[in-house]
Structures are given as C-alpha cells and as structure tokens.
Image 1 (cartoon, protein in one colour):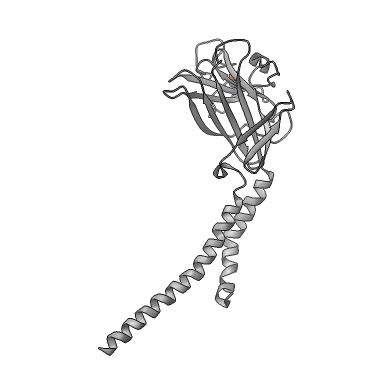
Image 2 (cartoon, protein in one colour):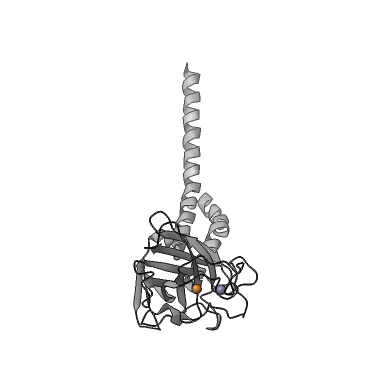
Length: 260
Ligand SMILES: [Cu+2]
Ligand SMILES: [Zn+2]
C-alpha cells in the first residue's frame, strides 16, 4: 500500500465506514415479522385469498416498513386492513382476532390521523387481476416494546369492504371504519433471516412461516455498504493511476510533437 493511500484512508473511514458500522449495528437489532394470510374459516367470502404481510423495523426508534403481497381478491376493489388486538386461533376464525389493536384507547381513523388505533392501516386497492402489492411505513406500529404496545403475535385482518377511515355516517365508523366482513387473516410472527429465508414459529398455533427473500430486500445488506466504501477506496487509487496515465500520454504526445 503506497503512503498516499494510507493518507486517504482516514477520510474514507470518517465518511463511509462509520455510517456502514452504524447500519451493521442497527441490522443486528432489526426485527422482521411475517403474516401468512389465509381465508377466514367461517365464511366463503375470501376463499381464494393467499398472501403475506411483512413487517420490518431496523430498531425501536425507526419507522416500521409494511409490505402487503396479496392475491385472489376481486379486481379493482378497495379493502380495509388492520392489525387487530388478539391473535387468530388455529381454527382460522378471523372474528376471534377481536377489535382493532388500540392500546391508547383512541377512536378509529386513517393511518395519517393523529387520533387513530395503532392497528389502522387504511385501505388498499386491487389491480385488474385482483392482486395488490403495497409498501407502507407506519409511525405507531412497532415490533419492539412491552407486549401491550407491541404488534407481534396479534392478528392482521383483510376486510371485505373499504374502510371509511372514521369519516363515514355509519355507527361503526369510529370503531371499525365499517369495513365489513373478515375475508382473510393471519398472525404477526417474528422471523429470523437465515440465508435469505425468513423463518419463524407462531407462539399462537405453533405454525412455522417461511418466506424466501431476494437479497436486495433483506435488512442485513450492511456489508454491501462496506463493499461500496472499499470500491470508493479503490477508486481513489484508481483515479491516481488514471491521472498518472493521462499525464504520461500528454507528456509523450508533447515529446513526439517536439520531435517534428
Ligand atoms: Cu379489521
Ligand atoms: Zn381502527
């Protein structure tokens, strides 16, 4: 390693390695949870539904990222979805998930409202095939903290109708958003990432959930940032070499012109 490179390293350590180390540290604390959505067993309303909801949170102070990937609904329809207070039992009776997850005893609202249930996730709309893919963040739901305020091991419910977000004329508006029947549901199960497969076992029904993830979506991509820092590091030496090469070519050109 040349002395000019040694001189360059501390600046790179300051600018790139510290953020990378912080990312790595937060990745070690990160929590991920998966919901395996299954049709409600007491009605035929959501019999064709399958899908997952993934929750990812780097640490207790970070916003949670929620990814819904659902198939088998009617095309072009709007559906309310919520985290409910109780887990879904092995019977897959979605009604048993109880009311919306509401540890602060507020009225029902939209995700962006100041006054809302923790579990209020608003609505999603299906595409022409009856599928939906939604990525959202939420400032109240968390995979960390006391069980009273923690979303883990609670039920997530997909509803038949649109959620009126607490703004409807229905008497149910401020409790359920009048979102209708429960089509499908599942439990929020903490998972760990092992070789890009998320795996966890529900404490409610003992069912193991697994989901393969593309490397780009894992929370443990901190090493990529470290590699980026190394590439920058090599770029510094590369730039020096290229600069020398250009200077040499110019000098050679000047010499050859001088010969004429
Ligand atoms: Cu609900
Ligand atoms: Zn609610």
